[in-house]
Length: 317
Image 1: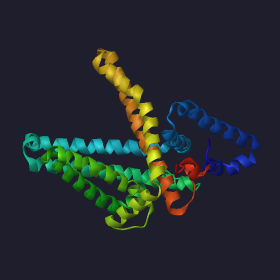
Image 2: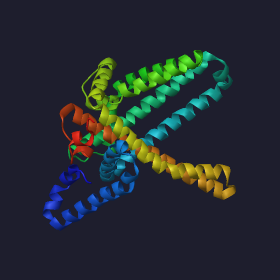
Image 3: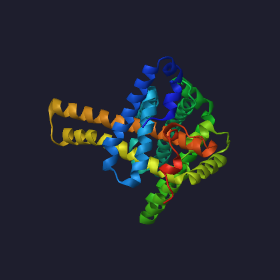
Image 4: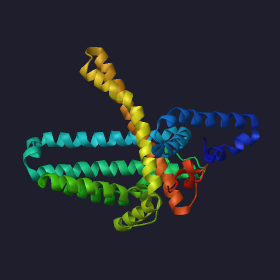
């Protein structure tokens, strides 16, 4: 199934060449239908609707394959930052202290959480901006997305500090209070994930300043669309887990069963597949959340919602 967004973006070219328009529509419809015919019949019904959204988001991703550059840059930036932190720790001889001194350990954890949160949010904000403009039949570039994320860099920085502080506090609670702390951390992590489901679209597309207003806005939007949000998240996760399985199998085979060149080849191939699944999952998740954000804030059906009624995708019963 193809979304109407794709047809709109190519309307002028298709009208000038009816045969080309027919070929494009047939090709992309076949792509969506074929993917669904392969995946959906084997999936339980409660996940099938989320996978439907995933398939339609993949069709949109096919229009903007350059979006994959942004999650890749995010992974490279996080890896480079961690490598720099490791080099600093070795340079000043504090590696042992990270394992024996609570103050050093908690400080390092805060840095890790802050870096990963700020970098991931920055590049996800760029993807969200590009997806939103694509929904409006525009032609955004990767640089447009990066520029939009840079404009809200202060919001991203505040959010990263808050997320890193909470992450560090929860780690301390988990460590100091045993099983009770672990349960408390698990419960809070779940509640926090739901509360902040729309935090990136709110930061980059919304006009709410201040972390409290942004959190309230994100929580309110999730409350409106919790069924769609949960189902879509499960659908995306399941789809890309299936993609990652061969990579995980190659990694295990290369590590436990192979030796020499074959082991290196298997590990490299498996790693590439897993990274591709992670990057694809991040990109499609951003597309789905942007479409849900638009639907929740304006009622517009865009992206994976463009060709169908969301109430039919996510019935109450």
